[in-house]
Length: 265
Image (tube, rainbow, N blue to C red; front, top):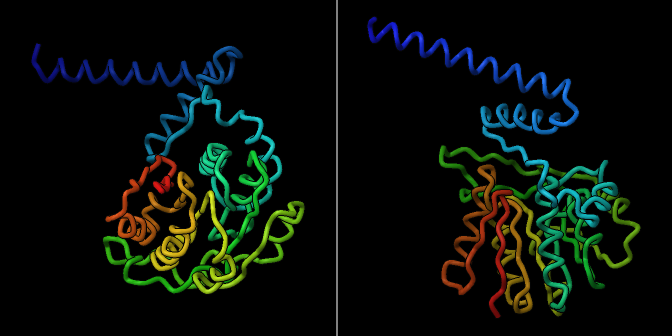
């Protein structure tokens, strides 16, 4: 019996075993009430692995937190931030209940992330919402990917201001600051902030937001970058890395693509 023959036999048995596993998982997903969730998770995870995605396990409890579920129902028809990132915003906000200060959001779009925060805050705060609603500003060289291409162009991600205002109209503790960053910032120059959420995709507005808000964030307050881990937003990552290079705070990168900075003092 040759080595080639043995190798062929082993490959055949391995392939048969894989087919049996696939058939078993498919059968469990269809016929077994007890194992249906586990079986579907295995099938989904295999497909996700193949294409570079991740499927959350059913035993992860963040999806079942009452404050998250309530907000999720409220925003189900509103486009914007994915659910895991929305939960990170909520969790960060709830962690600073004892810290004074307002909330600032740079990049509102239709208000999905805003609503998630508003519906999870554990204390009364005022929310300052900054957006041009005309889409992104002009990208610069800092926004180019390694291959030299720029993922965005001026005007991308524009939205109707009226939609955002309508979505948030039930909340009385909000102020819209409509216009380009940083031109709209002086209107809050006298305010202090507990949390700043920066979701503007590009280098210059991210840099300008950090430059303005950093000194106005209270000690132990939080600055969140929505785009830090996105290959489509290299400029946002550069802006954070450059800004905090010689400052005491470290950048905490999350698998959601976000980054968190806790203000030292």
